[in-house]
Length: 239
Ligand SMILES: *Cc1c(COP(=O)(O)O)cnc(C)c1O
Image (cartoon, rainbow, N blue to C red; front, side, top):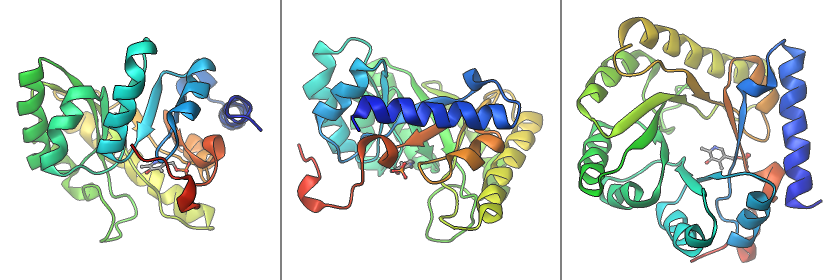
C-alpha cells in the first residue's frame, strides 16, 4: 500500500471511530508522524493534501524543513518529542507547533527565541497520564500551577494538551489515560481560562486511535500505520 492509500485507510478508521461514538468526524484531525522517514514520503503525504507533519527529533525535522519548505507552499512542522533547552532556538526558527511542553525552562527559552524571530508557536502541554516515572509530561495534579505560569509567555499560543497513553493490550488501562487528560482539561478550563480554552486534545497513535477518539481526542498522531514501521535501522533517514 502507498502512503496515500494508508492515509485514506487511517482517515477512514478515524471517521468510523467518530461515528461509533456519535462524534462529527470533522472534530478529529490527523497528524501524520514522519519521524525517521525520508522527505520523499513526506512529499507523498503532501501530494495527498496533508500540510502539518509530526517529528520528534529537532535536528532531523529542521533538516527536512530546510530541504522541503521552499518548494512546498504551506508545509508545516509539529515537534512532538521532548525538547532540551539548548534546542529551543531551532524550534523557534522553523516549527509552527510544539506538542511536548512540560518544563518552564523550555517555555522561557522558546519564548525568548520566538521574540527574537518575531514568531508565534502553537503549544500543547504534555500530560503524563499514565504516571509512569520515566515518562515525559507534567503530572496531572501539577497541571493547574504549570498552566498559570504560561500566561507570562506572549509568543506561546497555548492550544491544549497532549499525551502518550500507557502501551497496554488492556483497552481500559489505555482509556483511563485519556480520561485523566480530559479531567485535566476540565480543571484548566475552570481555573486557567485566561491562558487558553484548552480545546485541543492530541491523543491517540496507530495502536490506540479508536480508544482515543471515543475518549475525546481532537487530533491523532499516526506514524507506523501511514509510513510503516521504524524498526529497521538501515531504513532510518538521516540528514
Ligand atoms: C512516534 C510517535 C507517534 C506515532 O506513533 P505510531 O505508533 O507510529 O503511530 C505519536 N506520538 C508521539 C509523541 C510519537 O513520538
